Length: 442
Ligand SMILES: Nc1nc2c(ncn2[C@@H]2O[C@H](COP(=O)(O)OP(=O)(O)O)[C@@H](O)[C@H]2O)c(=O)[nH]1
Ligand SMILES: [Mg+2]
Image (cartoon, rainbow, N blue to C red):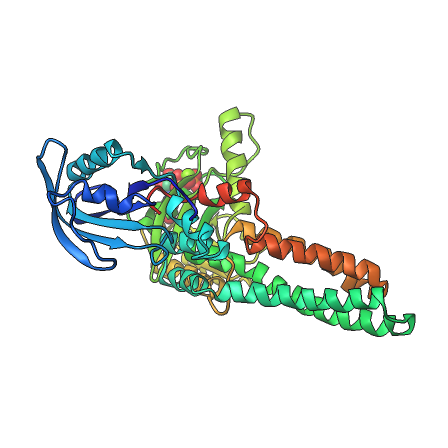
């Protein structure tokens, strides 16, 4: 058993709803709930639901609820558990919680339920992380990716790669220990083929991080450009309401402002930034630094330009040039603009023309960057460990290494990273770090 503590938490959002669920886990789960019933000897069979009345110690009815008892290890945490489905009023939840505390059940820590599931081998560390990304996913694709990982296919992939490295290490060690020197070249060649396979797959997984993050957190669309070109006006036009302050004074927006925006099936975060220029004003400079940071982390960039001025000649990947204030152009000027080579979207944020076209352009970009084929990694921890794996084995491949001892050393190092990845050798601080991202009740 992972935990001798009996703990509980509300596992549904706090607020009013038809029902709310409180989960209790730990060796005293069943005894604790029985103490709240009139019939304290009631036989609770595992997995069945019972409609019961819960009373406090003064014999006052708290609520009529549905309760289910799960006998460990056949429960989410692997320990004995009870689920209480109450009416969804925070006062009821509060009253029951207070009663549970007096019965020596503790309030759960963030992620404690999932952590117990991990310690009881109900799930592995990758699945625990997938559970977190499943709960946090902001799009259907994000839910799909997380569900695939939760079902264990990412774990299987990591295990396969680790297995390949272990086989390779076995081959190398055999050669080092007993074999004659003349087959060294052949063995190193074979080992490098396996290392290359691992490298390629790990590399593909590393590059899947971005589309996974976009699907789970939503793409970051950053509006940037010079002061007064109409960035905040474009921001407001896309949101369809006046969120950001717009004035004719250059340097109005001092801080980045962000709002969630759904563009068809894509959930995004739209960010308006301070216009970039040389300034001696300290506050404006801080805003500009922030803009640069947002640009660095952007998935899609909207470069807003005043159409009266020149079109920029440099176009970055995932960037859309938005030529604003077209209402100020003469027909002739417009003609000249449309014949330039640079692809741009013509809008007037003020008159709200071209905004639909801009939305379509953004959607196109989102579709290409958020493809969700194949396996995805969903945590920074996974990404960083895979980067370490590849750092350990890339020099072997690049140098066409023939020294078996050196190859074996690096292969061992890579296996170590896979062990961390799978949670085989995770230190407490790693686990603390993973579970600190969970809410109480998960
Ligand atoms: N004529 C015209 N003026 C615009 C348009 N978009 C913004 N403006 C004006 O340009 C000024 C600066 O706009 P703002 O959105 O604050 O620019 P920012 O500094 O880039 O955020 C304001 O006076 C706006 O009314 C547009 O499409 N047409
Ligand atoms: Mg602005």
